[in-house]
Length: 138
Image 1 (cartoon, one colour):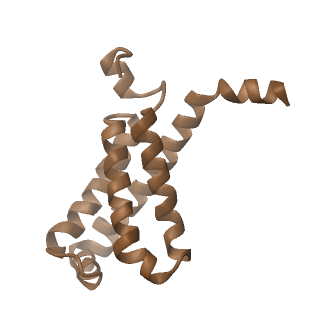
Image 2: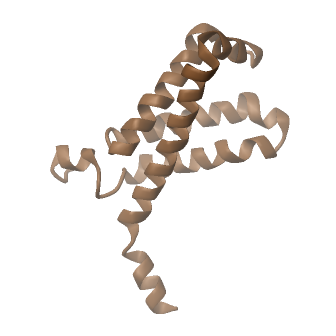
């Protein structure tokens, strides 16, 4: 058991990479669906139904953030900033939309809050453009 714990403690870079890539994949999928499948009219309608102000602005902006932010997470670019924004976005989504429907619809947003916090506090890991561009200062 001790060897396993020692080995696990040396896997932080891989764990952060996987969290970053999984979060990026979920964001890209959500952004793509908002912008290209639902379209601007569909996204605006959905955000209006949820009661958001300026749904014609907020809906597409969220979709664009998810798509671009998810791609940036794949590359490990601006990881901490995107982690903060993901955390804020999904806390707001949970409080304004998901919790009214119960625990079941809140599970993925809750995991994205946690993933956003991990990325915001730990960065994207060793294998990121952030690290390459900052030469290890990040």
